[in-house]
Image 1 (cartoon, rainbow, N blue to C red):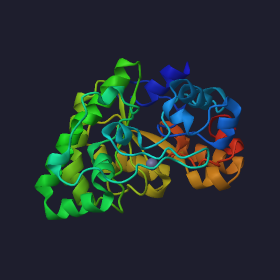
Image 2 (image 1 turned 90 degrees about the vertical axis):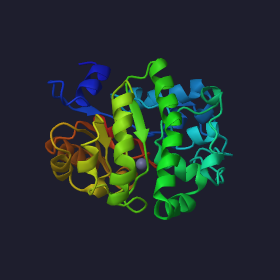
Image 3 (image 1 turned 90 degrees about the horizontal axis):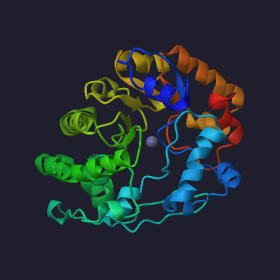
Length: 306
Ligand SMILES: [Zn+2]
């Protein structure tokens, strides 16, 4: 089966074709891949040709079935007006200072899609970037209704970027929403995010993969109720078979390879995790999150080619 078909079959557990694919929805960019392709950070964040060459190396050098042409969490923030520092070959970009204090400060620029941003982030992550993590989280306790209104007002940004990617030919949308357990309680996920993620699942007209870092053991079951196609999980959540048990039969799962192992382990350890992921019924096997920029290529190649 060709990579594209294999990947799309793997994330559609209702489709009847059961297969394993290799890949990740988050960044595979690292120094050695930049050397191979000549596409370096920070230019590869904003130059479409360089971005495409670096992303394609995920397939041509690493043998993955899916490529993801964005490597940072700052694109939509840049488009919304944050002063992003794009970093360098060994530093990831940073979003800069918050730009909004109150809900009425929210302005979505009319030329949003012509600005240098196009990654699909949910309202929760956007809330962190525009209001500051601390202010945003305090707001969820002080005035939950206002938080709901803020999340709602930011949703058009998510939809606009998702639709622009579909219009440009994307087969699948990666929706990152950093509702990690240390910053978003299970109750907050249920109250604020479950309804929003349901809307995104219903309204984005392509398969959607939700990415949340960190331990998500208390919310994999809730993600399974959103109608989203696939969940990109972190190995801090538990063993593959345990995560599959929480997810149930319908939700596809992506991940299974620990970033710590990729960064500091050996190819044999990566291969052992791949086998465990296959045995645990994980559909798309790959790194759990954006990899550290100094991850050795030999370990990355072991994910699909080892
Ligand atoms: Zn992550």
